[in-house]
Image 1 (cartoon, rainbow, N blue to C red):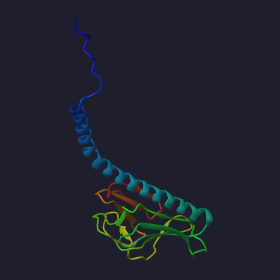
Image 2: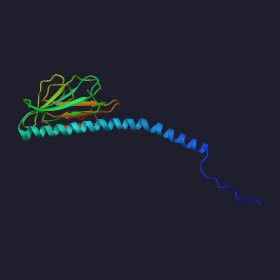
Image 3: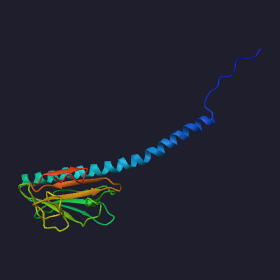
Length: 185
């Protein structure tokens, strides 16, 4: 009489290779989407942080009764750096400088690089004041380039992908930001 059949334990090499192939395909599909999502998230985070700090700079101008100058600059192949100083400039900046992620660049709405630096000033009542900087991108109510501060001033940022976020400084000093380049109203 024969004994009971030996119980089979474990997986065969073919079964393991099928699982590895399925996992490999899933990873190959997921990684590009994750990289794209991560770039967009970093851009959104940087722009939201900058917009919030600019709002805080505006409130500081009102509360401390001093004009505040915000300077956004980017050297070629370098990160965007934003500084906050009082006018006239004191011995130390109003806030620490913000250095944006290295994948973020300052552009116009079409994605073309813009001249650096761009400046904006909040007077003692929190109103956006003209800095007479010809590098600034200013838009009228019809989105036509024009003089600041009678029109909205914009800061446009783009990542290595196609994501585009914009900060708009209204003539009243109000700061808004959005994902689309059409948030200047």
